[in-house]
Structure formats: structure tokens, C-alpha cells
Image (cartoon, rainbow, N blue to C red; front, top):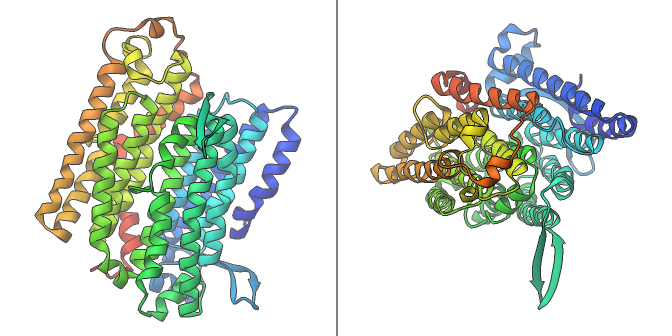
Length: 506
């Protein structure tokens, strides 16, 4: 399969699957599952080619290029000579780590959405989403990167706006009351907020092109021109809003609360990682000198994000909103790690990005499942879930312990390596970031005490806590990965070391 097919085939495949399976909607999920498995296998093969290129029959010049740059060239397509750009596809270890994470989460999302309503449309949109999100991580052309970045919003808008939770949002605009379904309001807010900030990023890309004359990041990097602070800040704002970093985070809690839990997995596990990926790829790797000037600003924003969102999680009664604030808090740690601009800091950031996706996903899934069963979002209206749903409760506790950094889980390795790399880069004062673990312990233990343990409420006693086998399977996979990579983090660090071995550090 040609690399470009992976990006554009989902456009036609999603439409074809939708129209052919409307009369037998249960088939759609099997097609989606097969497609995502294919994507995972292809990504795994690319990883092997990048990690061990000498084992493959590459032409000598291609082998030399891979060893010199770390990028595996996948071809140039849709060239437009008049505008001086083409769809350049090439990936390195950082790219392929994101591709594997995306494909893996999409596979598990199929299992957690096994009984979703209107499956033909739902799974067709997931297939459609897979195209541009793979494009984001596969292209080195900044203009195509922006286009793929924007296209990911389209299927997510409908996945949140149609399949989200019920409820009505009342807002006043110029003293006029506007009533919208809460899921529609959250979807529109998510779309507009991230789109507006993406336009800042686009202006930064255009100014970068005007300065260097190139659209491709590998050529821009070779130009090695001094970059004005304006360009850096324009790109940083686009990535920070997607991450999201404080104070650009306000769109995410609404989106998470209203989105189906499986879509929350993609929001937290994939879309937020686009922001972190952009920070690494476009600020640290592409513009290291300018980034070094503003590294302390990144640290301040990262710490503010971690502590502010963490404290909001402590005081939150809404179980899914609590998980959403926890997600934002942990992404603040990623910002601090990226700001170190060092091998170990960037490796810690990549590990935390993957760990965050695997840890936060079961928390979102179980939070949504509990709401579906009890018809309440509030933890103090639950209680005693362990007695009636021990399987889900055990996994919620495991993922929660990983979120607060329990040794033996991914959360511990991620937080520890970020603290060590930050202290090495900025001094002992940055060890204050360790307080994030205490805050995490506060909201996780408080959530477990209110919702999982204690006396069962009448709502819990009346609920039917049946869980389907596909849902159990997906949660079991998340649990296994949280512990496996917590005990054996080396496979991820091997990829990280390969990803950042071509960056000089500071």
C-alpha cells in the first residue's frame, strides 16, 4: 500500500462503508476494526524499518538518508510547482510512535463502541478521522500539516455533536438567551476554539515560508536562519491551545463531558498529543535557538497548567470532569519536559505522552460507563460501586493509581523521568513539580472514596452494571499496557532515544 493511500483512502472508504452497511450496521464496526488493524501493522513495519534500516533492502542513498536524518522517506505527491510545495511524506521514530498510538487507540475504541447507536455513521466517521490524523504525523510539509490538522476537526465535530450526552446549554449573547443542546454547544466550542488558534499557527507557518522560501521542515531547518519571536509565539499558541495549556484549556472540559467516552479517549489520547507533537517538532527541533529564549515561559505555563487543573480536579464532583482536569494537569508535565530541550527531557515527554493516553483512557471509559448505568455524573451520588461492579472498579483504581504515580505503573516512570530531567535542566527549584503527585493523590483517592467504596446509594443499588465482553477486553488491554510499560519502559525509551538522537540538545 502506498503511503499516500493511508491518508486519502479513508475519505472514500468511509463513504463507501456508510452507504453499503446502512442496512446491516453491525458490519461497519468489523470493517473499521480491520482497517485500524491494517494501519497498526503498517506502522509497526515502519517502526522496524526506522529502528533497523540495515535489515531492509533499501537503495544505498535511501539507507544513507535514513541514517543521516532519522527520516524514512515515503514519497512526494500532489506536487504544485507554481506554489513550490508538494505533499512530502516521511516519518521518523517520533512520528511512528504517534502513528502506533493512534492506530492502537482506534482499535480499542472500536471495542468500547461495540454497541454504539447508528453504527454505520459512527464507525464511518472514525475511519474518516484516521486519514487526516495519520497525515498530521506523516507529512513534513508545514502547509499540508496545517490542512490535515484542520481536517481532523470535521469528523470530531459530528462525533461529539451527535453522539454526545443529552442536556441543554443556556447562554446569553448580548442579553439574548440562546438554548442549544449541550453536546452541540461543546462541539461548536471545541471546533471554533481550536480552529481560531490554528489560524495563529498558520500565520506562523506562512511567515516561516516567507523567511526561508521552503514549506518542508527538513529544508527550513537546513536554512538555519534566525527566527523572529513573533513566528515562534504564533506557532506556540496554536500548539498550546490544542494541548491544552493554561489559560487556553477551557474548551476541553466541556468537550470531554459531552463527548461519548470512546471519543474522549481519542480527544485525550490523540488530539491533545497533536499539540505536544507540534511543540517538539516545530519549536524544539525546528527552532531550537528561539525556543531556548522562551523555555522559561514554557516552564511557567506548564507548571500553571499542572497545578491549576490539578486543584480544579480536587474540588470537582463531576466524575468525568474530574478526569478531564486530571488529563489537562498531566499534559502540563509534558510542556515542562519539552522545555528542557534535552535528550532525557524529550524522551520523558514522549513516554509521558504515551503513558497519559493509556492511563487516562480507562478512566474516561469507566466514568462514562458509570454515568450510563447510574444516570448521574456526581461521585457523591454514587458510592459502593466496588460491591456491584468489581471488574470496572478494580481497573478504575489501577488507572487512578497510575495517574497519581504509583511505582510499577506508567505514571510513576513518566513523572519520575520528567522530574529528573527538569531538575538537571533548571535546578532544584523545579522539584516543586513533584507536588503534582500529591495533588493527583488527593483527587484520585477522594474519587475512589466517594464513588468506588463507601455505602452504596439507592441509585447504585438499582443500577444494572452489566459490561459487554468487548468493553471488558479493551479495559483489560489498557490495564496490561499500564503495568507492562510501567515495569518495562525500555521499549518506549528505545523509540524515544531513536527519535531524539538527531537533536543536539541544549
